[in-house]
Figure 1: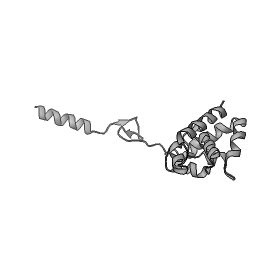
Figure 2 (figure 1 turned 90 degrees about the vertical axis):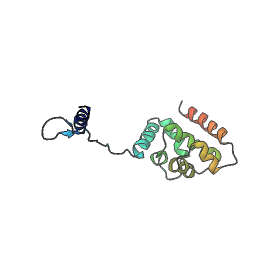
Figure 3 (figure 1 turned 135 degrees about the vertical axis):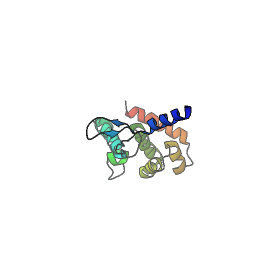
Figure 4 (figure 1 turned 90 degrees about the horizontal axis):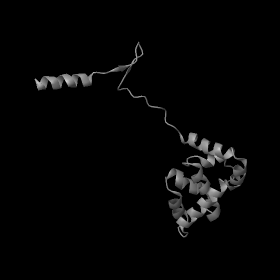
Length: 140
């Protein structure tokens, strides 16, 4: 008798359940996958946040590589602070921003790891701290 009960439970669990009513019902096990978000959404947000503060934008834009917009430069960074700190490191150490950005965005390295790769003779921890202090000052 237990075996029959087990088959009945299995049959109930295997039966598709529908959600809703009418001709457009959806099986409960169906999954709806949202369209993947692109980094453009995030970068636009970073650029937009900066543009909303004209004094901040006026300090950062001269640090950008020639011909690169704020939106292009911030593309792929996780947040505004990470982006601004990278701009400062680029300026402070003379590391081309595009190279630093590539290490961080394309190779998913931290700011410190990127500094070590591109300028191994400097103390990356000290330089990251210096850039973070500058970033905090920018955001005040």
